[in-house]
Length: 395
Image (cartoon, rainbow, N blue to C red; front, side, top):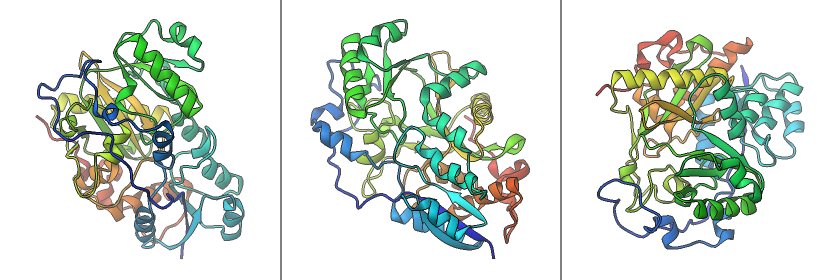
């Protein structure tokens, strides 16, 4: 029987997040609030300590997700949990699984997402997902955008600010409004409505806040006014396939909230007892736009060296051209259909259940590395471009 190692980081016991929004709906006209119209994330300010602490473990998985992944993998072999703690190298060497299913995000450093696969490579143990280089590259938003730009893949114009005194020189040529975010974070950590800057004074203030409190450079990029989509990819090479495209329904956000998938939108306003209707899948778009989004998504997936699966965020510029915002080679995989988790939601729209999604990611990885599993890749997974992965509906 195949021995499968499950590498993960588990969230600490959950603490109650205080919603910083006031009650109410969204702006009637759908336009961006101007700087004198306070977005909800400013209406009940959190202390800096609260703001930083609440998203510290945002990237890690809950016990429910870990158990669901373990259950899915157990259909393919015997699963051994390998939590990515300090003793992970010793545990991995002791267990020596036939293959590792990696969902560990890591904790320390700008290469944290690469730690588990790098250790697997050191011991010669196959693993799922992207390699250490791609994981480190994609966690650095600027290096990702530099690679995309060099290869002719559209992405918003940007600058990197390491010190506040360098802000004007680095970002002075960019056009307002500008959006800023920590350079080496995922899961919308450090991203609130305050990060959209309509004037240079606010840009200076918010950049200073991020530099001081997230202890890393800040990415400054031109804000794109068009619709936003998130795209799940399964497979490898020429057989990689875009699942049904997810359109972001920002009208579901609270009144005054900006059209941004912020930390609040993901983890505070979107609650199990009152979920946001923020994902539209398949996205209601034209065939032409669908094809254009799929093309730029797959280009980014391949150019950056992603493997097996990934989630790629795309937004339209003023001319309607899809631009890549970010690439996540370790996508979120919440198991509950009621949760807004892009990859599982897109898979379900393609006729792929949660367990099959998890299993097929491992099967893609096993096929790449010559690891024999008990069951072959199922046809509904989209291998060889199966019809089950017919993407978004056309307008």
